[in-house]
Image (cartoon, rainbow, N blue to C red; front, side, top):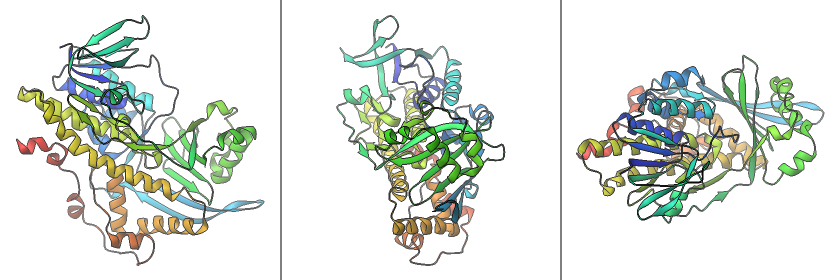
Length: 440
C-alpha cells in the first residue's frame, strides 16, 4: 500500500483526522486541491467538544493563543421606528459558563489559522504523514484512487486500506460511493464580512428585528465576524443601492459598529452565503467513509458545521487507530463510526434547523413566540443547561414536552437549579464516543 489511509480533502476535518492517525502510528496521506488560502468564508466558531478534541490532538494552547474566547451570547430584540433609533424590546443571555466542563466557553479563530495549526502539527509526523498539494481525487481505477496533480497534470494512483472523503459538499468520494445529497434550501441568505471592532466588544451578540438579523462574533486582533440575514434573491438589488445600504443597516442594528462598518468601501469585500442542509443516508461503503460536509451540510445558525467535521474526524481516527493497534483492518468495523456519528449529526442538524426557522419569518406572532422562547430558555435553569449542553457537543439532553410548553410560555418557568452531578449524567462518556472499546 502507498498509505494505510488516504484522506481526500485537506480542510480542518481532513487535517484533524490526519493528526490523530499519524500521532497514533497510522500512515496517512492527505490530498488538498487548493494551492493557497481560500478566500471563501468558512467556519470560525469552535464549540466546547471540539476544543476538548483539539486538546487531545496537542494543539489547544496554540489555538487559544490565536483565538478569541467568550462564554456568553447576548440576544437583543429591537423595534424599528421611523426617523428614530430602534427601541430595545427584549434582551437575553445564554451562558456556556453553566457547563460542568473545563471547556465552558466557545472560541472564534480564523479558519485558515486553525487549518495552518493542524497542518503544522501533522508535519511533525513526517515519517507517517504525506501532504499532496495541489491535487485532487478524481475517482477509482483498478482498485486505486486516482490523484491528479494540478501543476504538472500528472496522474498518480494511490492504493490505501481506507479512503476518506473530506472534500466538502461537492464530494467526489461521495459520488464514488453512489450516495446522493438532497439539498434543502431556505427562504433567506446571509452576507458575511469581517470588520474592525471596538476593543470592549468581547462577547457574541445577535441583534434582531421583525425583518432583520445580525450575528456578531468577536475574532482576535480587534476584529469581528458579522453575519447579516437577507431575503433569498435580494443580494443583486441590495448591491444596486450601494454600499451605503450596508453601512446604514449595521449602524441601525448595532450603533457601536457604525464607524467601523464604514471601513467597507466595496461590495466585493462582502460574501454571499447560501445556507443549505442535507444528510446522506450512509457514511460508510466498504472501505470508503465520509466526514464533515461530505456527509452532512448544516445550517450555519448554530455554528456547528466545522465542529461536526472535527468531531467526525475524532471518532473515525480513534477507530482506525484502534484497528491498527489490534493488528487488523476490517471494513465491517467501520460501522462503529457510522453508529456513533450519524445520530449525533442528525440531532445537531435538527437543532440548527430549528434555530434557522426562528428567524425565517417576519410575522409579529412568530416574533413573539421567538422572543418568549429565548427569554424562557435563559430564565429556566433546565432549558438553559440543556440548550448549552446540546450545542456544545459535550453531551445530549433531549427536551421533553413540558420543556417545549414552558419554552413557548404555556407554563411558567422553573426555578430549581441543575446540579453538576445531574448535568454530568448527560455528558458523553468515552465508551459512548468510542463504543468498540467497551465491546472489546
